[in-house]
Length: 280
Image (cartoon, rainbow, N blue to C red; front, side, top):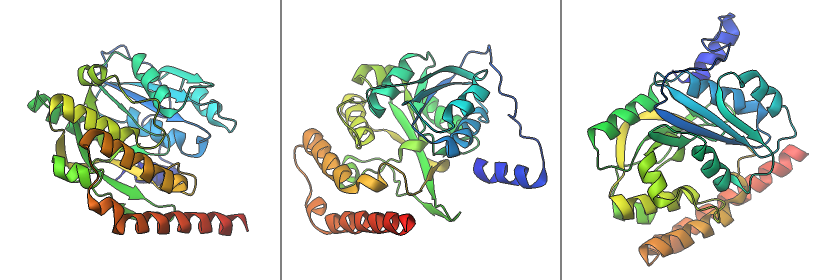
């Protein structure tokens, strides 16, 4: 059962939430988890609950880009549990995440977009994997997509290899955890990137430290809805990913120029038509 489903059941049955009263903790955090957000009040509480419900000590940091919806009200309710939060101009998502992680001190770091969720026990699985493999700079688990109609589907995630990473991004960002030492060594995210900054980070971590390690269990939920940045910028995302790949690998496999562009074009068209239909 996902944390999203558990919260939905609590709402239907009237059961009290295990984290209905956010509170600060004095225990030493194991994970710094940054939540970048902009006008996602509809989903923000679910994301924060999924982090707070983890069975490891987390310091939660929210970097809000100046939301004009009800996000600030959500953050005020959570202020007693957050290690730090900010709302205002942030220089873009990558810069906000870098800044947020800089406000933390835990040995493991990550970020969770405010419309995504962690699965119960996900962080513990990632930490245990990294502790068992001291050479690995980061660990990543399996992730599922959650569509607006409540239907789940698997995200394409597979064990790490350089060849696989040249063909697609085989790592789903919501299900990842990174050693702070590795994060700091590569300088975090590239603030000049807008859409493929995670793909770029995996390449830089790999080039500096070696393979990232895959955890064969579900660790996170990627929420799919009409307002996601990737969905509404597929062509730009594809172009930026190609530039990242060329920079780190030196060349772009033929697959990126053959069937895949048509898939991206079709999904971009479907997203545009979906928006027009919603507007009608």
